Image (tube, rainbow over all chains, first blue to last red; front, side, top):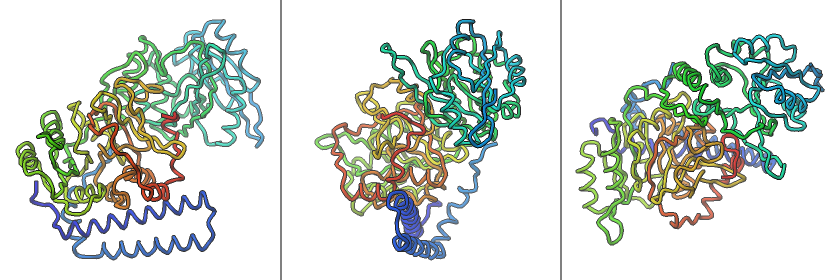
Length: 86
Length: 483
């Protein structure tokens, strides 16, 4: 079961993507929490949103690399199997 | 009788009392205010009830088949709820039992939960349905003797009806009985209703109709996808012993599991004992893929690396100190993880002394709790909650199955939480992306995690987890109980 596993380089690129997505979702959660409890001012909100925008740019950059695209291609057949039921 | 809302919309309900004695009817009638009409149907078959509903002139109808009374002020509470939630088409309420001292003890119900409903009719005895909705859905089905309310409820979840739960006790049954128990005479009707429901919602089988209102239905596995079991481990013998939890875990999976299409992805520290590696290689053979971990401890990082090194369509995150009890465990988890919109599925874990370690996560008043923890195996739990497959807000990463696509979509496990709360964070990310999480009592494992393990939590872990999710740390919907 090892013939079509991703290469170490592809895994490294995917790890970076996972971390960026996690940080983005974490920041979005933090924004929601702050808005619930702290009634934040515009500056605080804008700072968090700037940070989030920066992370999204980094995510797009990693997803644009050849290594990451190749890693996705390795596992692509697994992802086309539909999980939907009738 | 229609009563006008404060916003001008008429409100009113016709209670259709079915098969009750004259004294039961009188007792119920005496508890009803002027917001309602009360009619009686003697034999209580579906056709007669449908005719009674069609003849009603109120916006809502409610069929009451069990002797009991409304709680004082119940209709005012219901009216207020409907005013605040005007889209409500089907409404079920909490109930209460009378204690010896005369006070009421509430029977709390979970929020609308379609998967739980196929194992237990938890809506109970007071359900209000908009008359138009009742007619649109076709009223009660014919031929489900004694179980027409259950069949209607299952059918309502399959359509577009807006189903709501009023978390306030509104009904007091005259005699205490199991929630959703329709009696032995309704068993055939319950079975037929469940079989039709499963067939209409992706498949499954009815394994047992319980005489206590708890049924065992199982979703069916679709196809035979590869499951990647990702196990992070130090890979060492226990101190002063030739026993290794990892070896035992892999042995139990290989020997007991009935599902056959899986691989092990073992993320193993560079301090692992050679004897352990040799033994798991012998046991797992070609199923084994070893992934070396050379970085400092980070449970989340190890899981992420394992998932990215795996090739399964589904990933099963598993601690290395578990042992399989039920051979069908992987099928039960997989069938739930394959449901439309499912993000995760989790199992029942026991300590070595047969007490419960985990029956789902619970986020309650700012804290995170394992449901059922340290209660004896076999404990039913509130409203039989430890016995039914059900929707939950979270599960432990000691044993969690996920579609690989969902794991990647939510960014895997956060490496900002190397030890504690990383599973809470993962679950909340999954929920936040709109996926559901399901738990099953039928996939059972031992988890040898010590009750007395060092569970100290670092300050930064609390800061990180609560910094993200403090506003989500009270979610009583699917589990409205403290423990």
